[in-house]
Image 1 (cartoon, rainbow, N blue to C red):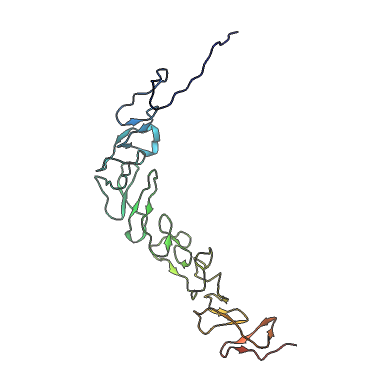
Image 2 (cartoon, rainbow, N blue to C red; image 1 turned 90 degrees about the vertical axis):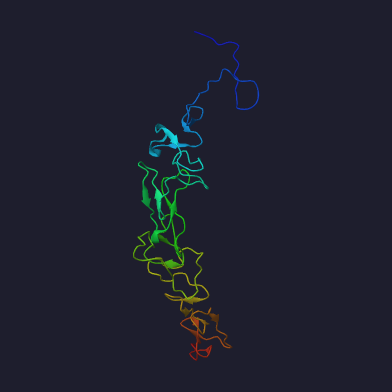
Length: 236
């Protein structure tokens, strides 16, 4: 049986002061960095990003010299020495060829730092998503469920201005049917008024009927839209 005696634990940290000679440090080769030389240093990237730390580090191919150490993407202000044409991006996977962006109308795309999947830079009006293949609220069409935009784009829902596009599900993004009409309207295009309300045009908000005598038909107040008067039908 053994014993430890007179033991003292100490720690070290980076900074000014006397060197801690008992702490082991690695002397990294060119292009590598980190306590265990397991990362790429500034100006270098992984030659095969999918292999992670098992992939060797190689110099970035950027005019400014700086890039993402994993994907090799040039940082803002830098450009690759082998730029791809508009509407294409450089695939981070070997052999790092130029690949067409998954965006409609030949729009450009880019890779965020650390990402292996491209994102469209500017989506057409009414669309959203990494690939611009989803209709925004208030729009409908071929991209309602992430379908291809090659044959059909997103169009505004025809609700006569009576939906709140900030509310999810205000209109069906597949058919364009208005689902959450506001301003006391109803109908597939929010073209009609609720009982007890009227308007002169479909685009106008519906106002409450101004009746001197409340008239009920099937339990709801009615008024004649043309003359804005109460209905002559009275239930007793």
